[in-house]
Length: 106
Length: 121
Image (cartoon, rainbow over all chains, first blue to last red; front, top):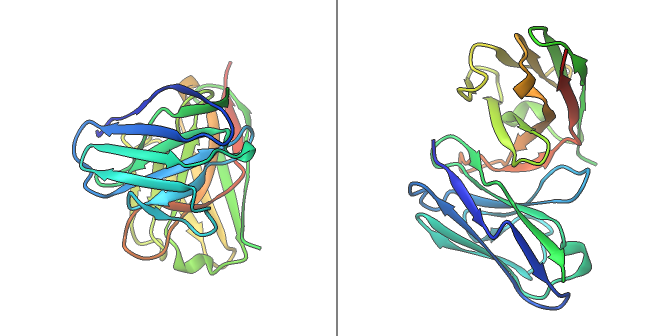
């Protein structure tokens, strides 16, 4: 099983600032990586797939990068609605998710 | 409006069975591969099973293989999950999820709201 490790577990950032979230895979997942956002009581929402392609309706302030085993989600200027939990997901070998990064208001 | 709505959650004793349903609307259900994903309290999501658009192929995570069965009825636009021999570690919110069309990559572009299953004596 490919283990996805996200860091940090919690990230405190002020509105308007940039947030950078990291996801590392135990084995290469090539470009088969997605990011999801989850708010309390809601299902995850697809943000980014194929490492860097934004899903439909996702604002341009969300961007993804990386390849192989190390990936980054960047939110360029945090809005109030962006404070949530973020998960990475690989689908190179079956499907596994990371344990999440909680993005909180500083 | 596209929607997935799960039903069938609740409290069940260890060793018992439960059947989940997921009703789809607003899109051509029979064209999409569909998945079940669960999320234990405070944890990341865990993929459980997939069924192809025509029901001909099914795959399971090792954690549920042999206990859970995924199926679909496209005439009713409904996805199912039959869960047998439930364990306390099966306690989670269960989501049905639509696989994004194209490219044969297992990304999920539509999720239901989820339904809680609590396995407890």
